[in-house]
Image 1 (cartoon, rainbow, N blue to C red):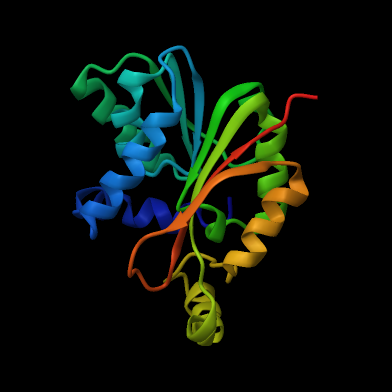
Image 2 (image 1 turned 60 degrees about the vertical axis):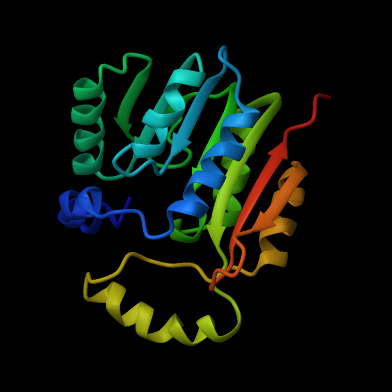
Length: 208
C-alpha cells in the first residue's frame, strides 16, 4: 500500500489519459471475456479507475474492483454510477487483504504484478483467493534484458516519489512463479511487437 499516495496524486490525470495501444487492450479484453461466465463472481486487483471492470461487468454475475488508491476507487465509483452499472463494488484494498475473502470464480491482475512489493507472494495470495477450478488471469510487463538498466534510475525516482515501485520480472520467472503457486497455465502469450513484452497468462487452480 506504500504507493497509494503516488496513485492518488495522478489518479485524475491517469483516468483521463487515452489507452496507448487500443488494439492490444481490446484483444486482451476479448480474450478475458471469453473465459468469464454470466454467473461468475470476479475479483479484479489493481483495477485503477475501473475502466476494464466496468466493461466486464455486463458479462458476469458480480465483480469486485479493488485498488490501493482511494482516489482511483472514487473515480471508479463515479463512473459506475454514471453508467448505471449495479453489479460492481469498488473498494480500497491491496493483494491479500483479508476483507476480500476468497472462492472467486476468477481473479484478475492486469498490469499489476510488476507493481507489487513481492510478485511471488502476490501470486500465492491469488491462488488462495481463487476457487478450485477457477481462473487467475494476469497481464504483466516483463522488464528484462536492456530494461534492467532502469533498475537504478527507477529506484531513485521511486525514492523521490516520482515513480511507483517496479519489479523487473522475466517471462520465464513469471511462468515459474505461476506453476510454483499451484496453477496450471492454460493460455499464455505476448503482445505482438511490444517492447517490453507484456505477458498475458490464463491459469487454472486445479480441483483436488
